Length: 204
Image 1 (spheres, rainbow, N blue to C red):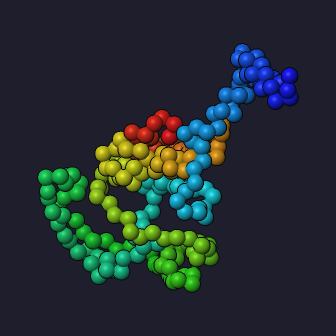
Image 2: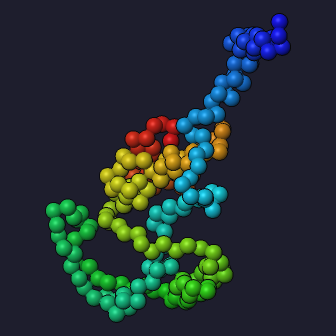
Image 3: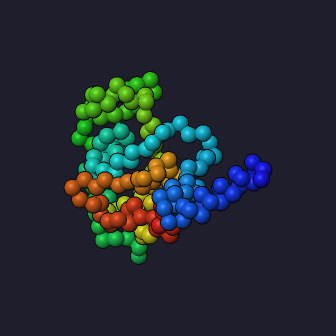
């Protein structure tokens, strides 16, 4: 019998005998490495190794932190009325007042980023941070606004950003979820729909 045929017979015997033993567990683990959560190559080479997204519901306003609105200084306490439409919530209508930020700002870093003067240590690392000021909201109600932020849909039910990332890129974790959510004190308004897999398979 040739060496090659002996090798094939040995492999068959190993596979046959592993059916009810620890070998079957090891084999299934090896075969399962190419699952739906296996790492995938991105369209462009990634610079970031990981991402921590802090959803600070009820946190400080962007107007009071990194995005000052000088026009509010001119309009401070000027009354205006929001237009009523058939889709507008009650809290989004009626008379309102413009209110300026009670804080002072300073320009820091090489690019002269405006930040609140109450963040003195933050000013030292401002050049290492990306500020995105193009976000717009379409809802003043907290649950729908949070759904919009986390899933892109104000009515909930769509996959959250963590699900989309794991769907598109997979994960290098073998024994942990592709992404985790750590609520602090309480869940955000709207609950688990803020990090749901939506219509994506349960893997995500």
